[in-house]
Length: 127
Image 1 (cartoon, rainbow, N blue to C red):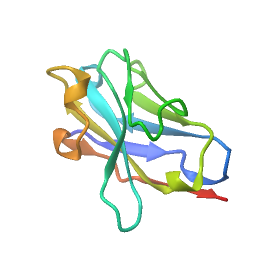
Image 2 (tube, rainbow, N blue to C red):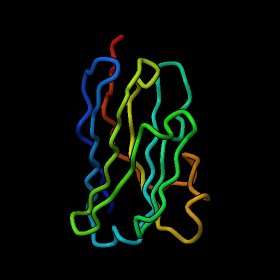
Image 3 (cartoon, rainbow, N blue to C red):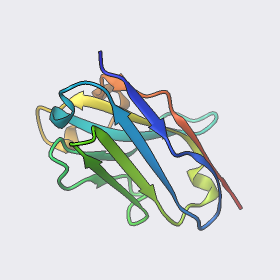
């Protein structure tokens, strides 16, 4: 059973930064594509970023490109999301997700593409 546990959320002022972490249990972490999604109240869950099993060339939603950076440490079974220049529109519950990767990372940009999910961590950006 694969378990994902996010941490690092909190309250930050506009323009500030947060770093989210997602620890993944199990021995197959290096075979998983990892995704970050977010869901604001009353809105659908949306794609934020994805990173391939090898860690190369993360992809991002246009709304976060240039501000957010996804990375992973396969030795620690952990994926990260560094979020800079935060604004109130970034307020949401952030989720990490995992799926065994069998193709291009561009195949993994929808919630339905992932098998495993964390419980989410709240990020609130005040103006």
